[in-house]
Image (cartoon, rainbow, N blue to C red):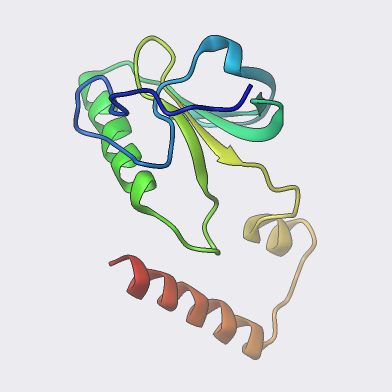
Length: 141
């Protein structure tokens, strides 16, 4: 099947665009499975996109301010490209189902490492993480 980029590849407003990330998806291209996490602003689901496992962030958009925030986040995510940041692989940037589709990672995140596994990093590990974050921000901004 393959995910294709529809022309024009912009959001419904025209403020977000990408040459490599599809911003319009046919409903048949994805499936939402079980919720992974719920928050005040969104729910993250395990999903399938064109046959592969993805994490799907479905924001709660009740106000125009929340819709504005979705578009700002999409603009930023379309520009991010760093090995330490999860990659946006697609988005649905038109009503009624606004969603972000990310690569799916099974490994624990920093919060799980610290609070569940009770990881106690050495000073060298803390410095390495700090250096990686600094390199990321220097690269992006």
